[in-house]
Amino acid sequence: MRTLTLLFSFMVAFPFVLSAQSAGELLQKVSAALSEGQDDYAVSLFRQSIKAGADQTEMFYWTQVEKNSAVAPRLVNELATYYKRKRNYDKAYLFYREFLQYHSDDVPALVSCAEMEMMRGKEKDAVKTYEKVLILDANNLQANIFLGNYFYLQAEREKKKLEDDYKKITSPTRMQYARYRNGLSDVYSNGYSKAKDYLQRVLQLFPSTEAGNTLEKIKKLEIEIK
Image 1 (tube, helix red, strand yellow):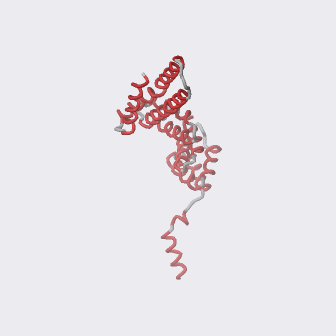
Image 2: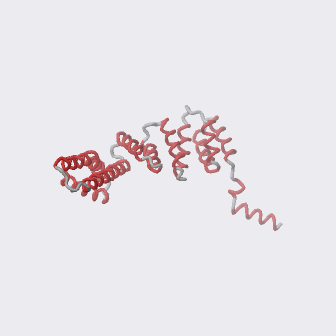
Image 3: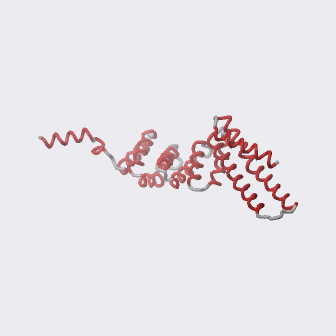
């Protein structure tokens, strides 16, 4: 009797241990739900199966899901979201790209894809993706913040290199000075000016102290360079 009492107490305290299902069992139910047209239920089960076994669930998506079905992008989005939360940026990027095969103009997915590109060290790819975001949604705060900071930092690096190279010249000629000034002008046009546009939009959308401070620096540089 004591043994049965302890077993009952264990079942009450930890019901999930006895009721936990494997990824394989859950995926069988996903298949059944899909065949019966129960897409919402299938997505819910799929989400659970990812937690139970992400690799097995991923393989199920690639091999068992009809890619032309209405539910396919919902399932791949679950995988992308899971891997993003787990900070597996390579896998998350893969599945956000897959999701965008279905919905190429989905702004939240594009933003997440750009985030993964940045985390993977692909800054130039992230720039292109964020630029696409702004074509679809000019007021997207995250895209404007990223691009504003990106072009500002790029301009800062290029300006420093120009200044360092110019300082190495002991007695610069007028021609060398003219090249230096033209270089600074190009840096402003291709870097600081772009950053200014994005950061001004940020301030229109959100009272960012950081964006405001950066804009003040750009204004001072504009006077110096021009």
